[in-house]
Amino acid sequence: MSNPVSRRKLITGSLAAGAGAAGLTYAARLASRYGLIPPDSGGIWGVGETLTYATQRVLMSYHSLAREFNRSDISKVIPVSGDPPKTERFERLLAGRFADWRLTVDGMVARPTTFSLDELKRLPSRSQITHQACEEGWSFIAEWTGVPLSTVLNSVGISPQAKFVVVFPFDESWDSLDLPDAFHPQTLLAYGLNGQDLPTPHGAPIRLRVARQLGYKSVKYLSHIKVTDTLKNIGKGLGSASPEFGYSWFAGI
Amino acid sequence: MADFAYAPRLAIPTSDVLDSPRHSALVRITHWIFTLSFFGLVVSGFAIILAHPHFYWGETGGIGSPSLFDLPLPTMLGGPSGWGRSLHFQSAWIAVLAGSLYFVSGILTQHFRTHLLPAMADLSWRSLRDSMVEHLRFKRPVEEESYNVLQRLSYLTVIFLIFPLIIITGFAMSPAITSVIPQFVTVFGGHQTARTIHFFLGDILVLFFLVHIAMVIVAGFSSRMQAMITGHPAIRKEPS
Image (cartoon, rainbow over all chains, first blue to last red; front, side, top):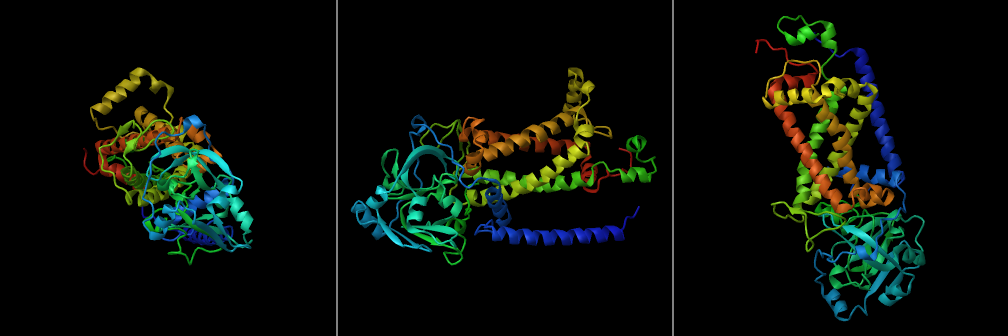
């Protein structure tokens, strides 16, 4: 009845384990080369984060469009989460109706540029009625108007080595996008909500809109955009403030 | 083998019996991996709900719009839904990978056809009613070679209906996935409807789990556990 592990089983088992380890190492190197490893791939949730992000980037189209809706679908109530930044700088800009507000775009770009609100509004705009889900579970449909982030990035000319676009708001909720989402046609620097100027609680004067990710990626109250090839030296190196609070960097889910 | 199963004391285990386990190694391994990930999914699903214990029908819903129903739970922001979502996805990956392995091998080895597809004769109302009555009396089942008709039907429902539906309603809540395949969400009539159905499907799986455990206890907990761990039911020393 005793069933010791036979020599053949031991040998084939070791060979299979060795091949598996070698395969995994090779897969990890390949994934890294093609930018399939998210910045928050360390830690206990790293396996899930990496599988989700890599699978989506490999299997899915970079520029598939999020669903768009009709005006009649627009939600009557648009919940607000979070408060406007409490900094003196932001409050002064708000009091001046953002006339003195500037958006700096720099980093790995050919022409670092500072945009005023009017300058951004003069660029070709896009309006879209999309569904936005918060990671908490609630959702709404609204019309967003703004300049595509790709238009701004093309106007400053990003370096061929660039890999990420980092956005810094007036508060601590900085975040970053990979290039597929940064250049996605529905990714906007939004200044309009349902045909009006973006209300302050919704991120005035400009917020990011990332149509294919959860709400928290659509960072409000933008002040600075930086193009970079690495996220390691920003914050804790996790690509966003969100992972520091336990939320995923990639929120396409 | 049947003699051995019915009167274990009298049977001398032959190598033939020992070599054909009640559950194949692949079924046993995927069963326990899936069990772990199922616990992960239930715990994390609950944690995610705590961020917004309200459910809606249609495309949208939130504070300030009418809900379909509200769970009597506290709203806990800024914590459980963060690690909850990470655990949910990590568990879902493990569950889907183990489940896919089980699914493909179940088709290739004809496990589904031979062990789970009920015989036509067993699908009569009379046969179903008899089986139901037996279950409701919590009658200890005789050691049978294979599953009874109610087991077969509930396993088939879970494997071929509930699992695919809970995966698709999960996909329906992903704005990235629905940008490629919008039908995942439009077929249900909206994001919030998919979320609500996902919740009910999860409840059905928890209910299935509870009944499954109850039936394992009725049938003999240690024997069934041993069968799912070693492949062979415990050989009882004393007649029961």
